[in-house]
Image (cartoon, rainbow, N blue to C red; front, side):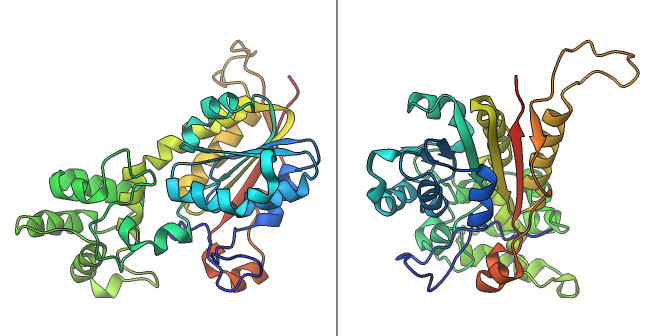
Length: 327
């Protein structure tokens, strides 16, 4: 299982002022079949890298609505996509709400929806957001800083068994109980838990002989981020909302970065490809549920060796694509 959960970083990318490189961008655009006149949704627009290529591929009259829960990401995307004028609409919103936000922006039946999951390198680089092991600021980890409970509040008030459940469920952390008990013990001191503080705590209580090539706190940070932003619940809602917006022949493309996300996407595609939910012992279908998706291409696609060499954080990416069946 890869635990990077990062949408990409690329120092020195030509023509990119902020250095952020979108992951598997050409594969995503090809899977979406972005073409002139099409309506597209980038439900996790981030810095606008994927959206830029989608708009270029759909020149001259394709349109796109971009969503992101992060206000700073919307600002970066607005600057990057300004040259496309009225062809692009941006909304600050969680991708879980795509089924409501996109129609309100005039995108009711669309040709493609992209979900590029995880944490962007821009968010990781901002020390005030609390996503990094190197941050001395209180751990926040919210994509939308105006909503939800920051990570440091969870760490300060949840009992050890609930913290352990978060670390185990969302991070698959083998030492979840030990780490949770250490957090509870140290917070009584009193302690303002920062990124560097939590990373040092996890490193101290994790047995040295069991450490892997990743930092020992990686799983804990991932787990907290997922819990704070309710990422897995949002993914399930977002997939259902996106499917409801696709016209027949429209494409749903998802790039995930760890096995928890990819498992949800794989199961969703499989269920919508199967259609019928009747028990296998029934001789005929009585539910009336028809298949709504068919898989597109190899599942999943992986980044090329050239991309992972250029952008090591792309190595955990998995791209899955499916097409809406005719009604």
